[in-house]
Image 1 (cartoon, rainbow, N blue to C red):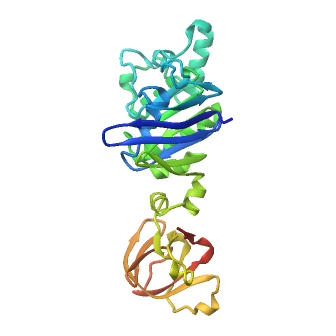
Image 2: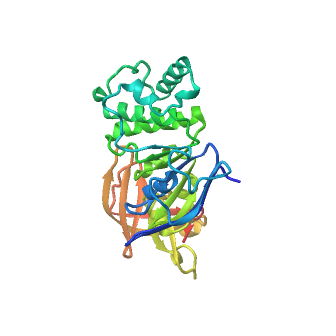
Image 3: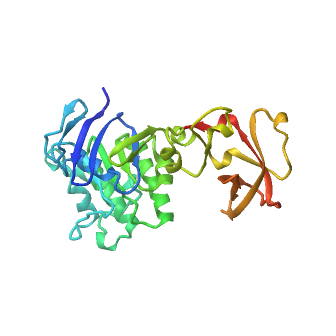
Length: 327
């Protein structure tokens, strides 16, 4: 039995219907990504009880919580807009969710100190939350969610309101909190790079359904569909017949799997590669670490990465057959 089991969880709206089934292991960091409107945040709302599901099953740690109230589910939730109490200082905000009936004042103080240490805000106990930066406020929101000692912590795009450099720093903080506490986390984000950087496993949603699930490495290197392939990173979709004689369908290749040559290449001398000669470079973009090339081969666009800027308009490509994904 998995730690969190979601079975046939359904919610129907006038123009949208959600239907998902998935499990989460205890201590797992699961991220949910997908296009806007795919149902990511709705899943979190249904699990917490903020939204009422039409039908389904939610079992947490062996207990059916489908009909339980929000307070009885043992689930914490962090939003993107912090939701702190402006009339309370940092300490009081964190302690708001604690079970004070079964803790002494000393235990409450020690737990508050430990939570602030987890989120990197040591000594902030007496600070007014109105004086905090966006990143600091989100850290307090994280600490407050952990203060209630939930079995599962759900995070709904918690970093989307912050600038890019701060998002990168705080995503490391969130993963570090997960590592220190061992808490099960479900993380919703629109940022693919963010999900890839911190997740044990990623689920991809589309139009209310789960269309792919796996480790970041699995989803990137072996996507199960053209949608998954394009949603998880740049790449090229080409006819399968180009690689495998007589085969129908398509193949997908990541740009880093394409080797550029300024000279014509003999296919017979490179049997492990698909060789394409006389490919025209249409554009070159410098990204800081490499050049991203967009090329045309008989009406098909091909993407490739190169450490050096090409000097010719026509080049040859070598693609390792083992790096090709058939779709």
